[in-house]
Length: 88
Image 1: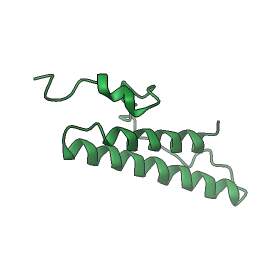
Image 2: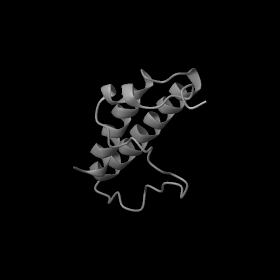
Image 3: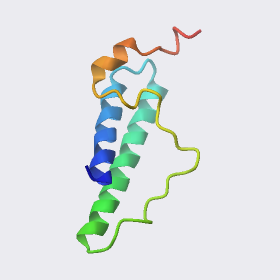
Image 4: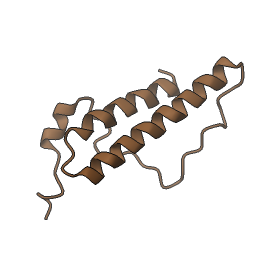
C-alpha cells in the first residue's frame, strides 16, 4: 500500500468515527483530520503524477500521534470506545 492510499484509508476511518463522536467538537476535529489526510494524499499523488518524487514533501509535526484506536478498521469498534462522559 502506498502512503497516499494509507492516508485515504485513515481519512475514511476518521469519517466513520464521526458517527460515534459524543459531541460536535470531537466530530469536527475528526473531520478536520480526515481533510488533512486527503489533502496530503492528493498532494503526494499530484507530485507523483507530475514525475516528481513525493519524498520530502510531507512533514508531519513532531506532536502528531495516531489515536490509540487507529488500528481499528470499522465504525463498529467505536461502540466499545470510552466516551468523554463515561470517563468522568
